[in-house]
Length: 272
Image 1 (cartoon, rainbow, N blue to C red):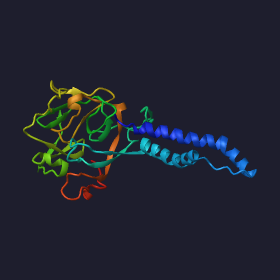
Image 2: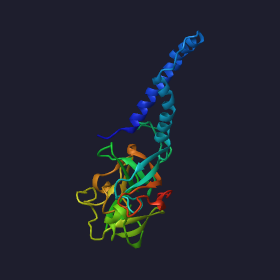
Image 3: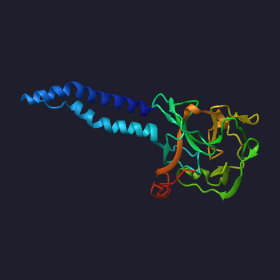
Image 4: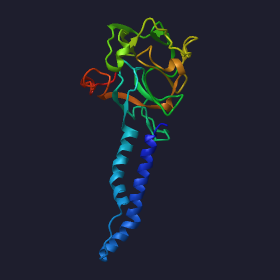
């Protein structure tokens, strides 16, 4: 069962804030009068805890819901941009502000651009968060052929880099072909295996040719093109499933790395 942290924060905020408010309005004045009358009256432990924890819990709720939320990368699907064990930060207001738990947008601040790395709720299981790169915008015609992305019949340029050498949890990708791909001027590295099929096993969305991205939806793909469960397999990401734009790496911890598990060089890196 997936732990619903946003729901917990909302519930805890209401509970601790409610206890503190009721005490301040009803019981605290009675205690003060009792003290003034010479009767010792200690503040209840429950109220003391509520008063102490409410500001912290509420601050975390506001920060996580409307500003920045941390995520951990659990797989290799976004290599070499993101590695298993990266801890990233996601801008929650890039694509508009949403109410926590309800996920209803109440303030529209922007839309994804082609090339953005986005976190979203997996359309087939909204309780699970995914991270991929935006390839197709609403109305775009998208296809993937011979390891090349085509948008509106135009192939996205690739500059070969060479053979990739993986470390830690990414060792399995050693020997893959690395290239620098450009999506509307957004340059980023991708990995492909020339011998692998364009569509991973079971992916049928592009099996019969190009698709047109419907209004209010986005076509996304992993940078590790032959090891990614993405729009080629299950379709489009609805706008309401967007969580935010990934922008930085604040920690990397991979227990399968040789030596120390922290990759210091990745700390503070921007996500392109």
